[in-house]
Image 1 (spheres, rainbow over the protein chains, first blue to last red):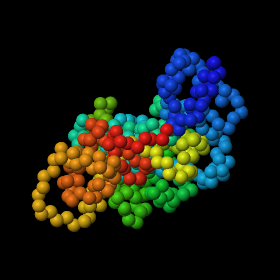
Image 2 (image 1 turned 180 degrees about the vertical axis):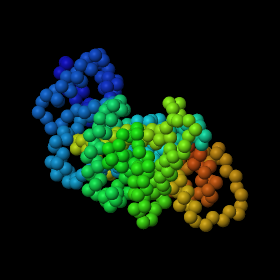
Image 3 (image 1 turned 135 degrees about the vertical axis):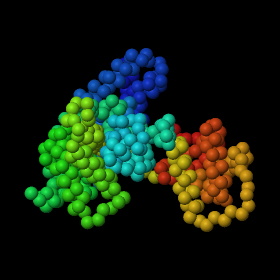
Image 4 (image 1 turned 90 degrees about the horizontal axis):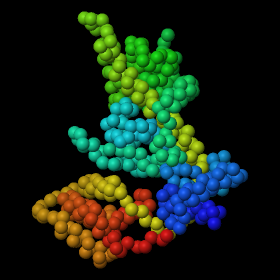
Length: 188
Length: 245
């Protein structure tokens, strides 16, 4: 029975296009106690880690999702006849980082932080649904308040916003990157 | 040393003035907490002078930080009555705080780039539907933002036309709501853009838009879209075509 539970969960995750949350799985498998479901998921994940498989179960935006392994990318692109998936522009990425670390936040705050007017970038991010409007600030002009969305998490393969590196980790990266970046800009 | 000749860097490479400033600071291996303001200001201005023309749209922000640098420099040159003590703030502090904050954002964006690169190499089932024909429409509910965006695009389109208003007519939310429901009962759905482009005046369109929002809010109608950038259709909530599941 326990093995079957694992199989059922596997099929549920397989058929979901969006990350399937633990709560959702529990709400469907009502005939099993929560503890058993959790254990089965844990075992299922372990199976996928240890076995030699081309697909994996990843945790993304608070749920489980099947994906291929990154190292198979070039063959998959050959099959699907896709050159490369689109990356975000440096401006979009910088604006997203500002929002991610300072949310909930406003256009004025983001622009001040970047030293650049961010109206246009913010609009692009809204259209791409990487950020969302969550309300208006109770201050003069009642500016709109922005937050990152679930799509933001899936785009960067994050399970939750807490998965973002801490400020300490950031300073470490800064030291390493500064040297590379200088060389990069010199050559342009 | 002629600094302008030693770097061949375009302003476009930088995300903004703070990015340029950070670059200069790193280049000189300067401690961010103790910036030699005169040197940095000179180098920064040299970059701007390098440009033949200043594109105000893009480069006004660079000028703003230039002004800040010059201001700080002047503050530091002015003799003070008493020597700088602990109570008195270093005029450079505003700049240092901004640079430190920006530096973090910059580092985070580099990290997100790495994550993005890795994530783009993982393929999910969500990618597949785009490969097949979209005959089977799959509706998604649109947000207020989508609706407002469509509305304003349309209104802008209308604006360009010459509008002559002669008669005054009052529109009430209530009437409009009834009218929308009636149309929906007769035609099962209405096309959002289509509906608003047939409104005679801006006033009428605005009242219609608010009526529609009110109907959505009270869950009488629902606005659906097949996919992004496609037309938004409004349905009576109890007459929505069953979604294939």
